[in-house]
Length: 176
Image (cartoon, rainbow, N blue to C red; front, side, top):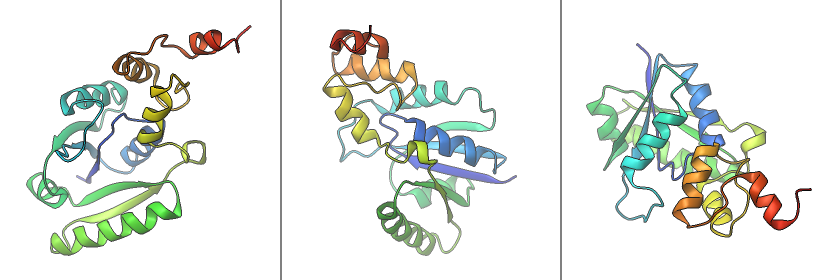
């Protein structure tokens, strides 16, 4: 069985993440999307919330499972008998950073963990979880960035209503 892990914070999951998940799932028999529990960061959503969000967002992809981990990816991969890590690339600046991590993981894992890069589809190349959170925190429209139920949760977390793109545009006077 060909298995891979797609690690990340997914805070929140974006259409760019989901694009990579769908494409990677078509290559592997089993894809584990694993949320890094990074105690150094202050996430918008707890690990448990992100697991539930990702489970809902990937419910239509039968060979995807969602998990979480703390610590080193190489330890998680080794414990779960996974030999390929998936990483998404948006721009050349991502590549330099991700290449260094991939090479470090390969060395530390004694060449048991390889990395496969997926370039993000052009329509999602601008997306990042950080930009989604910033846009939403000011009441901006994130409907083109994340699934509707995720947008609702993000707006709720910031205490911002309304929740739908149409309501946001109407409130701004952009919808006739």
